Structure formats: C-alpha cells, structure tokens
Image (cartoon, rainbow, N blue to C red; front, side, top):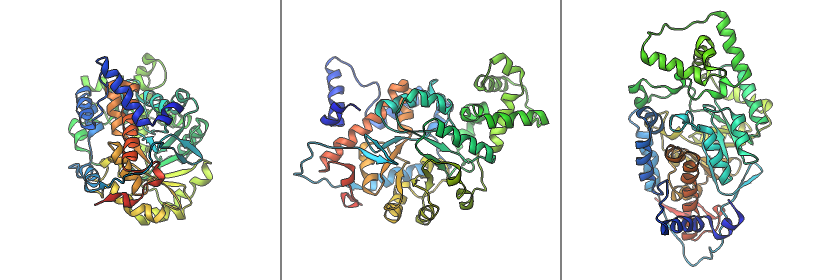
Length: 427
C-alpha cells in the first residue's frame, strides 16, 4: 500500500478508484459483496474444485456456526471522535504490516486457477500483507518467495511422520525468508468431507497440492527408497479416469513428462505423501522439540480451548491461531469466534493471537479484533477472487476487506485496531 493511499485512508482510496472507474463504465472484476463473489466463483469453478473449496465437514454445521457467531454480535458505533487519520498497521513478530490481515494457507489452489500459489503470492506482495505458504501448495515455497521480493511470508507446517522431512521443510522455510512457522494441529487426519467424498475426489491423490513435498530433497529420497524396496501399492483398474490421474501425477512431478510417465516415482510420490503427510500421534511432548529445530517464531493453528491456549504459553510458543479450519474438520465444533472470546482474555497478554474461520468482510475483522485478535487470516474470499481473476482477483478480494475494515473502523469512532475492545460489541 502506498504512502499516499495510507494518508487518504485505504477505504476511501479504494472507494474512489472503484467509483472513478464506474464513470467510464467499468465495474469491479471482483464483486465487493462477498455473497455475489461466492456465487460467481462457484460458476467459475469445476464441480470438483468447488467441492474442495466450499465444502466442510459432515453436515457443515461448523461452517454455519462460524457465520452465526459473527451475526450474533453487533458493533456499537461511537460518534464525535476525530477519525480523519486512521492507521491500520500492526506489528507481528517484529514486522510492521499495513493492516491486521494475512493470506491464510489454502491447499491445492490450482483447482481454481493454473497460477495457483504464485498468483496468491503476487497478490499478497502487492498489498504488503503476509502470505502463509501452504504445506499443501501447488508451487514450491522457493518460487513463491522469489515472486514476493521482500514482502512478508510465513510457512504452514503439517507435521509429517518422518522427522527428517519436518527438519527439511523447516530449513527450507527459513532459507525462503519465512518470518514464522504455523504448525497446524487440527488436521492430523482428514475430516469427513461429504462433498469431496461423493465425487471420490482427493486432490493429493492426483498429485495436486503436494509440490512442497516433491520439491523436497528428503521427500524425494523417501520416494526413491520406497521404489527400491518395491513397495508397490494397490492394483488400479485401468480406466480413462485412472489414466487421467496418472497424467496428473506425472505432470506435477519434477522432470520431463515422458520420463515421468515411464517412471514409478510420480505414483510412489503420491503414495508416500498419503502415508506420511500428517501425524495423529503428535503430542505436546513432540512440540517441545520444535524450539530446538527452528529459529522462527512458532504459532499453533487450530487452538479452540482455553486450556490448550494456556498449555501453549507453558510450551514457550509465540502465538496461536484460533481456528476450526473453516469448518472443514469437525462437524458440530465450537464456532471459532466464540472460542476467541474465551481464549484471548486468557493468553492475549502473553501470546500473539490470530484468528481465522468465517471472515468475509471488514466488519467481521472489526469483531475479531474487538474480541482480542491481533490479526486475522483470510482464506476462502481470496480463493473466490483467484477463481475469477487470478492474482488480481485474489488481491482485490482481500483489498476490499481491508478497505471495509478501514471505513468501519472510522465510522465506529476508532482510529486504529488497538482501540478496539470487547466493549465495541453487543451480543
């Protein structure tokens, strides 16, 4: 964000740009209403892509609960305060960012756009906001880092069953300029996701979303070892769909396509990933070793209980993300915003507290900040924008949220996120 934009106020500057373009008959390529954005994104996506992006666990009750938690709370504006100059900036782990908003890690985004994570990296860099590289990315973290220049980036870690792979991923994240590692705790196994299940569609089984692995030297070593042992796998009936899946795996594996089609490694890479990608046996005792394995700030993602937040303080980590994985893991889970209201008062003075799951607007960001979040992570909205217009679409979707945040902040009588407290809300 430019200094000129910051002085004018990001919200007013974005309004002016949109209205100015409207004089010439140009409408926003990405709808500013999140409901229309979602509708158009659905039309732009294949059924398989939309199932993955929009789906949740079970009956999707948790997704509905996330939104209901926002709707139950009302903002109470205050008047006659000087809000002519507003500063949205916050500091996270020593880095000042222009707004308390991050691009959340979302896996397999090539389902909605071929430029995938590279497009998201460019969008985040243009806004100067952190992008949390997904462990389930379609583009290696090094390529995304190169596309971002000196813009902030973090790395999400799924703790593999292979400890050497964990160390390799952490080392690569540090070399790629990551400023924090986000350990995702709520996906030690995949939740029950009927939309994907009814299509028989798991992107990773087709080689989609495993680029962090196939680009990793330790993972490649694991694949070669399994090939040498002749680990094999289940026999697959030769069908058109099976051939397409083989092509998908081979295209996404490093190296020439024809060589990959003849090699067992692309198929073995998928099997290796599925066998090792996350670790259900992970405990607090394992977490204690992480501080010795990385110099990066450690953030735990998926914390929903105050006792776990207190345990995180005792474990010496640097932050938590209050999140229920956007409702994708446990059907009937507590709404993330309700969990935030319980967790932030307990650990907010000792840990950086981030929030995700359900953010759709600037007003939502205000509510999360008022309940004690230091910043929020946005996921599905930027994926919807990505589906419509690539990097520009992802950028615009998040820019609209930041613009509305700026305006809502001022219209409620506040000049910075630090001024927001639970007293701002009712309900």
